[in-house]
Length: 204
Image 1: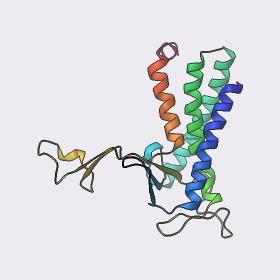
Image 2: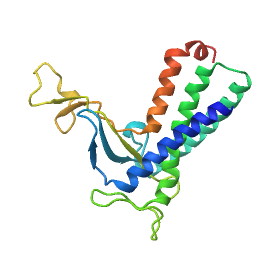
Image 3: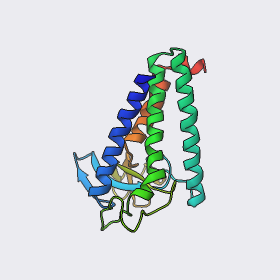
Image 4: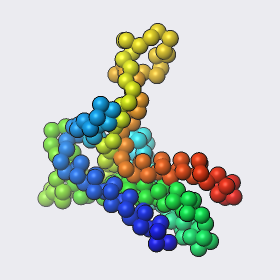
């Protein structure tokens, strides 16, 4: 069980270190261009991976509780699999999913208590005297990776391209969602299992 735990710890360390740095140095919406198609863009969301959301405070609370239960189930399952000496590939995929889930739970559970609110004009502070911006399990998830690889302006696009693919701003952007290391870990874990561990999935 040591290797899966080390992997989970390493992913969490990277995820939380970057989130802390972004939260304490950038304002909401601030961008740092790395290349033309890779931008560090600070945003926060109330919900799931890649900026998806459940409506309202009750939705967010339900999502946070579901995440915690899912993490417990995955952790117990991982322990059982390591005792059965399951293939490292399956353990790797599940460990990445576990790490990503825990990473976003930390944001939801504790960031509202630890930080002041980020805004378009002010950088958040850590452990503010007035208290955090939200209660337990009501914090926002920090996102920062933005990859606008392809951008189409609706006004300049060919007529045969359907209008529904364009956003309210009149642009089609691939890839529009902003995400974090935890989201990427979940995605890598799921894709790894689907692509390389089909025998494991069929057996479970």
